[in-house]
Length: 553
Image 1 (tube, rainbow, N blue to C red):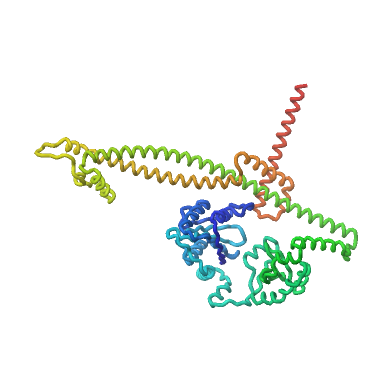
Image 2: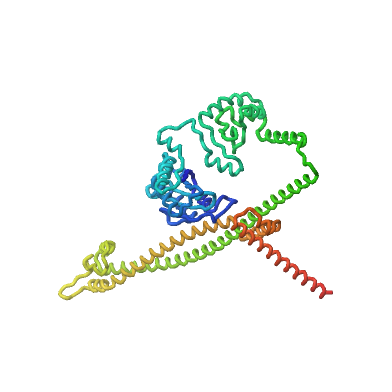
């Protein structure tokens, strides 16, 4: 197993990428399953909002996102239970079990893998998790679990060196994961960094060349004498022998691009253009190939073979373009459906919230009336109504039932009684005593009802927030109502035009997975049927116009 952690600042972009893919290359179907811990849901936008709110507990957390992908070799296909066991044990070993985290499994790529997204801010204490030596702690946890689960043991020389307390400056390094991804994107070979010892030797050999060269061409010529080349890499340069590399900045300050361009009085881009032009001219001046076809038939055969290869390459390109157009149109339709569903859900929830608010307003009015009635009863019943009511509230909050409470003991009644004679205040107090239980129960019932409606209102507001976010994301793809039809029609026409350039034979012979081939054939048949229906409709309309013209004549 391999786990490489990454730290970041924003949850929303990462979670959207994990669930939908890169922008322009969306693939929402790649998620197999998702599990949340210390979170109420796996919805990516809701999770992002909750995690973002949690980070407000810590002012010093600028990069609270901890992204930890874990991958297995292609020959190992662990089930979900094993993947979850590995993830949870790794989280526990890192001391992050109490933190909010989401685990997402993907089925794209050559290797089975999962992604763990952790909020490094503790949801209760607000303390930020300490990532000290996290890479080695991850390697130790994965190695121990490989042994316990009987999985393939991955070679980890960095971990061995860390355990020994040493690092070998002469150890040869393998290409990094990022370098392998770059090589795959550019269809090239991945390069490994030189060891520290080798890098110092090369730097000593070539430093003077960067100081003494007067042009880019001279600098490249000097480097080639050592078997080295200068290559553009992102915003900088690499010095490479075709298998290893180091960045040009390792040579020193005098090897900075801006200083070299100022000294050479030529930018690297301009030099590259001139160099390519010189190569093209040189190719045109070279003598023709000495190995010519022995006969005109051989030459015609080779020409026919080249044409076939070109046609095959064009057919493959057209099939890829058609598949991309179909996927884009299907994705637009799914997002359009999602927007309609989320819009309808949003309308329902808003109506339910308005109804809830209307009922809550009525309940508040009823509570106010019931509270006034209870206060009047306490005023008629007790000499000190506030003290008596406070005593009753303490008893009920302690768990005593109203039937078990002696209402004559929580306060002194108004009026007095002597030898069977009762004052008017005592008579009113006795009457209020009989009314108090019913009035108090009604007030308690209305209060409980209000709490339920308030909870339901908060739940609806949370659902509305999630629906608004989901609806907004869908509308970002499909556009508003005014432009949605135009975008759908434009995507349909792109798909139709792409399908016109391919045949069912091209699709069957294309190098595609079986499910992709069947999917593309179904789409091709649908487009063909739509074209035939359009032709029949056009023919009927033309016939109707001809008949109308004859009738007019």
